[in-house]
Length: 124
Image 1 (cartoon, rainbow, N blue to C red):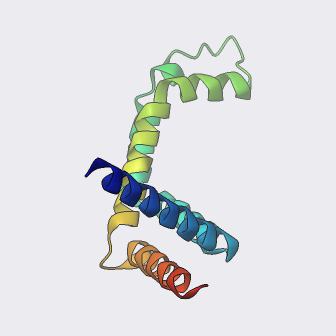
Image 2: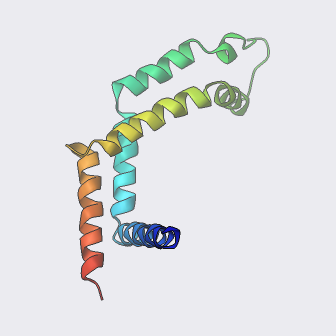
């Protein structure tokens, strides 16, 4: 029945919201987010993507040395050119870290969510 399914979906979303709220309140959310960014940033594969993108940057190659670009202009040009490539690689690395339930941060995230759900089940 559609009404029962809709109710189940609403209840599941409510549980998810409560779990995220619990993880935020106890500091777990911020701690895991910080470690995810640190771990992803330290990956050689990601550093290689960024280095290759910079080495092949059309924006850097067409800089006219006679015209001094400001740092902001340079950063803006690089962001416009490379943001999609770098952010896609970064997002993939974050996703891989978060979804590996066997070890590392993915496992810690899984365990933190499980523990929060169990605490919420016991709460009045």
